[in-house]
View: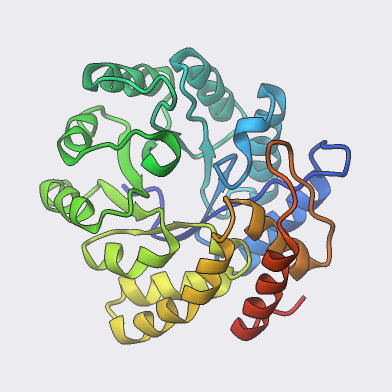
Length: 296
């Protein structure tokens, strides 16, 4: 059974000016996402600045989202790091506080050979009972999961899908082809501008950055796609392109987190090495958000 179909938001993690987690705002954003029709929430993903959270903060953020969601939609915890034992620690912690599934990115920096990659995921999977999504995003990790490795990793019982952010539609088509007989294996778009293409290839939806500011429209996009209404879905996808380009005009999540602040009228804070976007980026965000119909 797939964890979800439709639109999952890779949720930002709000901070106070002193760098501590703003749990009140986190809960408000979580509730807003549920009310807007988002189908699942990813806590502590890349967009959530997970790499700068301490272990205690990481688990506390996941727990806060789980408690606020209260079973209404799945909560997927980002628990992937480049140290297998550390990933196990985060994964078991996420399971303990009630996460419904895990999103586990490939090892970065030290990376792995194919046997090491398999054993990395196998050890993590054996440490929990939760379903796991692979996460392939070579632009950040310099490590791509090729189609034959996706098929091999899918033999691990609780690996049930992949967030595919390689940007390579040909690769994703090959993954869809070789996994076609496994109806329970889900492919999710990890790039906001490829939701239509990946879902048309048999994908189950998206794990989205733009859903932080346009959750209702992103949910409608995936619902139209899954219902086979490709004409309306095409219109919705193309309408988002200028805003997508803007929220990725600087390294993610700098622009989208600022966009959330503009939309909600709240201050925006980051943890170093991330910092505030340029004035030009903020002006572009304001322009494209207004053009898209997003008002603070």
